[in-house]
Amino acid sequence: MLLLSVTSVAALAYISRENSGKPMHHEPSEAEKEESMKRLGKRLTYILRYGALKEGLEVNENGYVKLEDLPTLGLLKYYTSDELLEHVKSSVSSRGGQRFDWREQNGTVFVRAAYLRNFEKSPYHPGTKVFTLGESCMTYVLKHLDDYDLEDFPDETIIRLMIRRLKRQKKLNSAALTALLVPTLTRLDMEDVYLTNKTLRTLWTQCPNLVAISFRNCGYIITDSVLAQLAKNLPNLQRLNLSGCDHLSSNCLSMLSKRLPHLHFLNISTGPRLTYEAVLSFIKSAKEMTFLDVYYLRTTPEENRTLVELAKEKGVELILRGPKPGQDGGKESGQSIDDSAQSNSDIENSGDEDDEDFDNDL
Image (cartoon, rainbow, N blue to C red):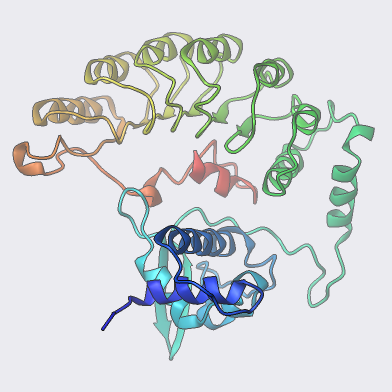
């Protein structure tokens, strides 16, 4: 008798239901089930981190929504409450941390994202499906972006909301990005944006006031030489996310410590081929560094202890997993965190509604 986990049942049910309501004519492959659960995870993440209010759900002061309300949304209509709760309980990050929280109160189950919550405001007037004036204006401007010169536009929050919206709609092409790269920007999130060398030159030419940038998962374009050019043209950078930039080498750390004297936040946790010696030298030389994420750096127990002790001495919050498995009992002697602790900051916490998401992501 074949026993299936609730998660597997959810995957099977979803595959069957979403195919125009018709039953499956074949046993779904492992790849199909994996893709189905990945799709569910992305949809839950969107709702519980960003879209709950926008989709019309009630969110309490701690970021929780009623589990029973989730299947009423179009994105999750193919799932039952039990299937969604099972995914909430079982979903973990690449570092082993829980992606979602849940609790029960007076017989009602509430769920939320464990971190990175930054709910977008509803685009409608309360209790209606009538767009607000601000929403209508932004929608119009984005549809006719070529007609506007935003170089002197003073509101960074609105510019960043425009960039984020076009990113989510998969419409942030080179022309749109160039129009939105304006001097008022001090923070910029380039994850999931297709970048070219021309775009990068535009970035550091048109945005001289940048103090924080995320190039997370931009490894296809960010190399040691490109990063050196960036640092040369934006010497006031304070926060930088290079996670997933796998064309970088350990040499970039020495360059960053010399060219970015005000850098105090660096996430370079995945991708780059870092060495223990390079990280050790960087911690010693980066004068203003307060946060360094090199989680996937492989170290021996002795190297691990040395880095942890040096970071403590320098006042640096060091994110580092334990030494190589099989050494020192395989225990983690460094400070290790899951994704939920990635500093509660991305660029800079200035308190506006768009910052929390960007702040956590960096």
